[in-house]
Image (cartoon, rainbow over all chains, first blue to last red; front, side, top):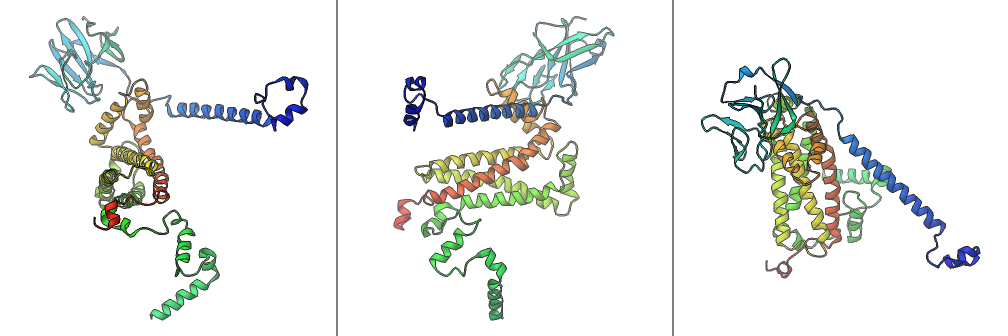
Length: 169
Length: 250
């Protein structure tokens, strides 16, 4: 088929090596497959976008935790709605996540044992979030805690800070 | 009495409507019996002939058929439950409680769906072990073995997505833990979790997504795969029968 075409084609085409020549059918096939491929990738992309919600009706990640005087010295206070411990130690305030770093269960503060324990798989942490024993892979993260102009504590759960950073009031 | 019934049946068979649907006479020879299978949409992918040995209890313990029967029970009871269930918070939990305490026979239906689900996971696993120990994964059955493994996964996903729908504490924490396991996947884990939950927490979006997976996408996938699985059993030459069974010794 291609040999017949080559023999009747112009001089430049005859010079092209046999087998490298692209027939009209090949050309159209490739164009079509290419167009379908691009359309397929595009559909995957827009479907992915469709499944990623742009607006979430979830609790705010920044919240006010009240006046510092609410928290006695040497105390760990569990805020149930926010799933955060507000810890007040002599060196200052810090906010520790109450969500276990293992599989996301809510830990519990055990004042008698002076530790935070997870009911699901038995991970144990110190009140500053350091891991005592597993299976949790990481310590409980500390969230950014600041004092607002009105003198209230404010915690931002999206901002993770080092355990050494404490808020002195 | 019997003769009048038979003649009535014969009259029905002679009608133009009957003949337009079935297009054949009584299945009284091997050829017409084969045609009865070939000419029926629901049977045409079943074997026309089977070896008697492959029908023995010990050949399969009917585990595949039991799994399929349980799937049909789940399909029917699940559709009935959908008439009383809203996949939204807080309706979902209340609807589940209504089914238990208010709707006539609701508790029977719900328990049947739940028990059949447990039994189906059990039957599917037993089926897999039985096929494995029979060597049913060996050529020419490799492809059907893989289809079977995918069906096992679909069964487990159906169980898992259905587990969230009562919207109680058990459901909430099971899905919290399960989706945190997903987020342990390298690189894409958190993104997959976000897409599956439709957010960062197990909330209404997650309930709706799991509901759609549970009542549409996964059952549809299961039906298609079950069709391929059954059809392929016949194309691969029927059940794996042990040589011992062929000898009739067992």
